[in-house]
Length: 307
Image 1: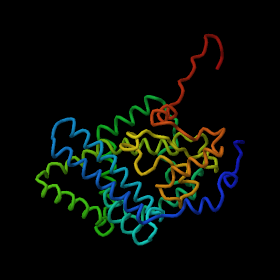
Image 2 (image 1 turned 120 degrees about the vertical axis):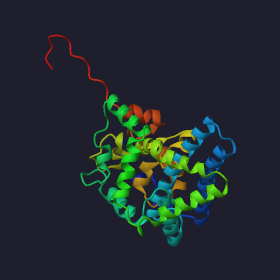
Image 3 (image 1 turned 180 degrees about the vertical axis):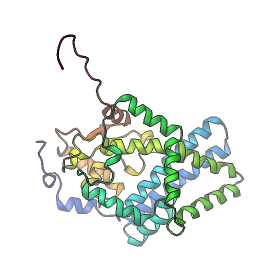
Image 4 (image 1 turned 135 degrees about the horizontal axis):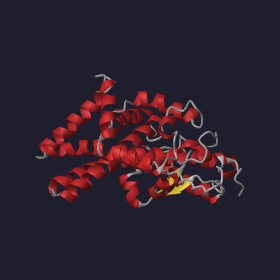
């Protein structure tokens, strides 16, 4: 197929309509699985406390923080539950509460990103503008993430904009989490949530941003295949880095109404029909993402040859 293939040539309106059907039942299962994994991460450290389980628990919890953000994002699009009120409740009081992201504020901000992706008005552009970067630059960013510098910086920003009514779901979530862990006889496990937020989640979030738009071949293009990328992931990458099908970001940008649990199928349809042929918009795992995010080293000039 030609690289200039139109989207309408790859998928019909009827197929798209079917893929855009949200399901309250499917969303409930996905949300339940999310909270079961979250509970299991705590249980792992509480029942078998040792350095290995503590680290694994923190990594799993950081993945759940990422998942909370993704589910909240899908609720903001009205593309998780079929019922609007369920999207509003789950997005604001459950998923959004876990990461201190008020749904209405996030929706206003994020829809600007969709509307202006590929332009200077994109509010997310600052996070990826300079990619690809030098290897040392990327290493410094990642060191700041895993040493807590990024996490503390972001937390201070949250406190500066804190408003009681606006951030009430976050307070309720943390109070409920601490209470539940105290009842379980392990109030100390609450610290694992904050360890994940401060020392692991910033790195996961950075990887997500780089993979979605940082390695795009032409962020100034209005064609999503140029300004957005999808990453095909392994099971462990899905568990720790890319939950809730967030890795299918290109498909999401083309059809934001498609629920996250149908994005993989949409990707397979478009790929089979050649829509991505000739385009470098698909990464294969986060190692590939990091490889693309680094500038190639400059070639030394031979002596006596002008630049």
